[in-house]
Length: 250
Image 1 (spheres, one colour):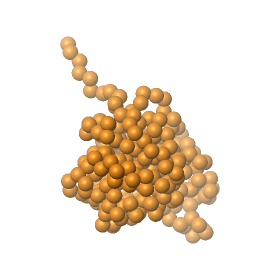
Image 2 (cartoon, one colour):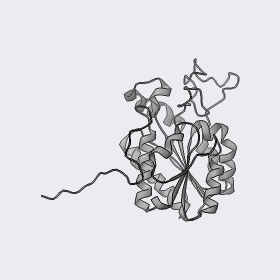
Image 3 (tube, one colour):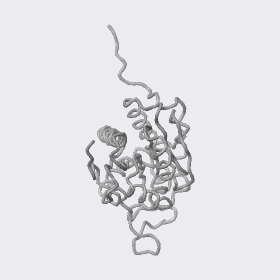
Image 4 (cartoon, one colour):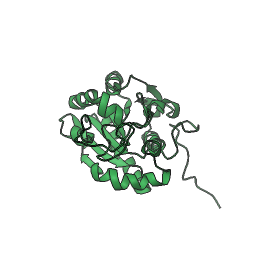
């Protein structure tokens, strides 16, 4: 009886132990990006730009070209790469601290200009690498090392969580904005579809595309791994609704 291989390791990912904490969603997101790049046949013409933060390890895992810009400057680097190599698939891989804090201006203006690269925005509502501080996407009431009693909008300097996808969707330069999650199998499949559509629209020259992905961070949240997934579903999704926020047409 012949057997058919239905599951394997993506060619666009190195085979090596993960650098991420147990229960982190980055590994799943890496696989989705790699699978789509392999399926589209772009591994030899793919470039990922990734900044300081948990995204910094992307070059250790992705088996294609990468650029590591300073913190928050990833969209500027992606802009330069895409303008010079317009036939390449350019991915801007950012976390919520990077995109929604130090790099907000870079992201907004790249989106407004309609730069033709795709941002993969990993939102885990916390500063994961640097000690679990409150991030721009931290939920109201969520505890962090810099908000030990929970995020309080009335407290000086705390404010509200930023909905990046909705913010960018109103700009004329954005062609496609979607928000997915990797907390269960069904949504992993949906998120892969969003990534594929964003890549297709990028290569069709449609404009700026972004896929926000809600991701668990058990270490930053102070939760055991199995408790992080229901926490994400119960707390993050009501604040950051899933789906295609701005649909593009190739």
